[in-house]
Length: 86
Image (cartoon, rainbow, N blue to C red; front, side, top):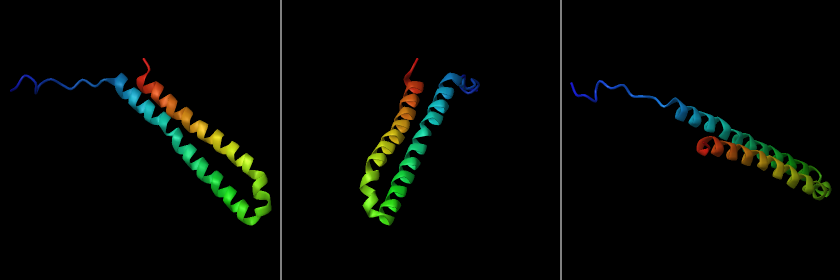
């Protein structure tokens, strides 16, 4: 029997927990993508129904887009902090 065959593999639980936590934190970016799709889809439907009112809602569209994208960036930064933080 080889000496290496009897040695059990040691699982690094801290590293595993970091990877799982970073993956779960990165799932927040999925919500940002879905939110942007819903936001622009709703704006497009409203603009098609009422083209005269579309221009007045464009500012709110971009504000909503910025806030939704910020949540995705927060999720990305948190996952990087989990992965590469001490």
